[in-house]
Length: 269
Image (cartoon, rainbow, N blue to C red; front, side):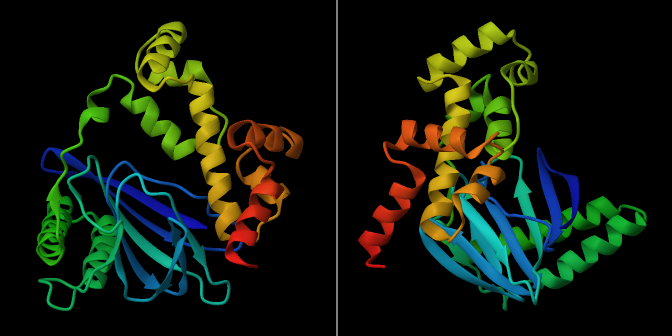
């Protein structure tokens, strides 16, 4: 998978602008963001899974996904996806339902033109190139907010927590090896103080929180895709399948196989 990533100023916020091209060497795992994600499909086709639903992806779509919604992009192997993403540094908007395909035909600027312009400006870095990109994105966001039933984000409490940078890191890297000392350093605390405060706020330890994220991702994959237990274990960075099965059963009360069988029986497969 080829990937490019840029941080750009946006008033008091930061825009995370990225571009991804799917290749056969990359496995997309379920993930979520703490803010709304804008996704534009520049090329190819595939599928987006979220909340036990599947949305076909094809060239020209502009899609919004709510913050904190587990989702996963899967690319067609013959026509691989090229996608552009925009994420803001805090949740500026939220909406219902959790995924919206936006009709942009009456917008001030075509998203394809915007992202192609951003590619050029970031590659050439001509005078005021960042300001130009910021201006184009402002136009796009105004048109989007006029097109959907957007609401000001009112749930800001998690961002006021001293632990927020650590929580954000876990949400984005839960399938990697993470130790408490590293998380504590992110929030400038001792490991002991961090673990104690984490338990006070979340009623579980940091290790249990990370495991819960991995198990939630495993449940998503088991319910949405025909992946083997081994491949799910590997994608979630477990040392071996037995460790994954033990952790899954401890949190869910069933083994991964029992969980998947129960879903298939419910769906009549």
